[in-house]
Image (tube, rainbow, N blue to C red):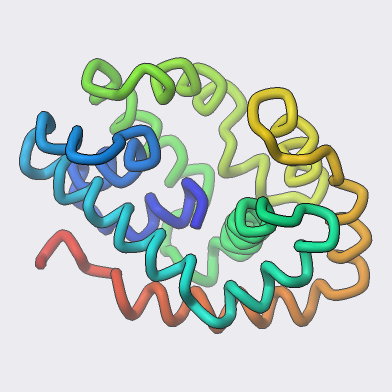
Length: 193
């Protein structure tokens, strides 16, 4: 899953939320240098990623994007699923997406000083451009996909994603709904565990 889903699945505990948010940038046992609540969030991030990477629905959706993205299809699936979460946010959360992003940004900025350098470098763009809200529109998703090849190994193939979304949006949205129900049942309310 991508950032918005990781934040959502963190529940209401700020330390878990921040740990989950920085999880990709904390490698190996480096998580041990963080406070216990942040460690819990980092471990949660890893468990969510493992669950996602092995789930049959995700593996099937990855096949849809594999012709263009090959080994990077999972990244595209993550982005598509965050797009569906953002564009259907009211179905999953009582707060508006805008209010949620405001709240999350305040939390993340309060913990900026503990974040790994790559996350610190990303944060000004995250806050300024309100990435989760950008993901809510198809144009925003394409914009994000177009930006990725400048900073990552993701191929520049956003036109392929646009074509697939035009042809298979309903089946992809259904796959997302089924998967998000499963991942939510597995990980929601983790802050009480």
